[in-house]
Amino acid sequence: MNLPLKLATATALLGLLAPAAAAAPLDDWEQVGTDARSGVSGLASEGAGSDSALFVNDNKRPGQPRLSRVSYRDGALAVGRLTWNGAEPNDLEAVEAVPGAPGAYLALASRGIVYRIEVDGATATVADYAPLPAIGQGDDYESFALVARDGKLAALWADRGEGPARPATLYAAPLAFAPWGQPLFGAVTKRPYTSTYPAGEGTRHISDLAVTDSGRILASSAADAGDDGPFDSAVSDIGRFTVSAAGRVRVTLAASPTVLGTFPGYKTEAVECLPGTGDALLGTDDENHGGYVRTAPYCGA
Image (cartoon, rainbow, N blue to C red):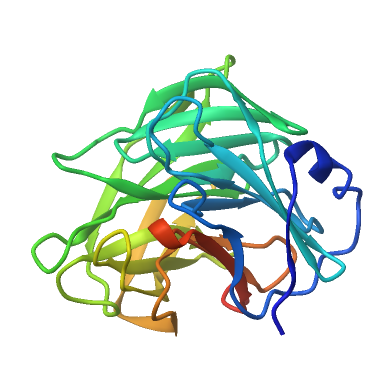
């Protein structure tokens, strides 16, 4: 059964965020935006046991939304826009919580600029920003994931690729932060990847990434025929990502990726494993048709 949608201002939304047990899964797509300015390009849970997540909007003009929050509880969905304080990014495509740093997030723009932001209630403040390392010619980024293991932090991201002629390129590197918040990347590993579904012209082989607690790499792939669709997408298990005790990263891609779910009519651009559960929170950016979220049981062992 679809949950009723309630659109609220960011101020009104704050009253919904008192601590509570984790919300029930969203078993079907629920709308969180109604136009091209309010789709979901990337998701970040606000923590274990939380029923709220931040999502980035891929807008480009000054004053347009960059970051929003979705909360679901007691059979209702609420959406609020956050105030962006600082340099305005062009085309944000992914967002990820920084492990061990409550309220801190990294948001990635399509051309490879990473913004470290600090979220306090309904305000997101830019602390610093820096380019990704090893940016390739023509790279267009829609995905970003952070993994913490044994006190070591690493990042995983990808050029999305485009159709049969351009596979995605998956990048990985150790990650640290300067005292003032700037992300500092170590040596980069990269691997090519071609999605099995969707396939053909217009396919973006990786539109987002998530890494499960056991190290499985989940990737969404999407096909986009224009601002009015039709759209198609899937989430697949594509391999494993490990971080050694010394901080070395390793990406191992599966010879035959496993398609976990397909979503004709939707352009999935966000995959987030919800802490403390086996569920993934998925989000779509369906251009003129807005954005949707749902959960799916993809993050278990």
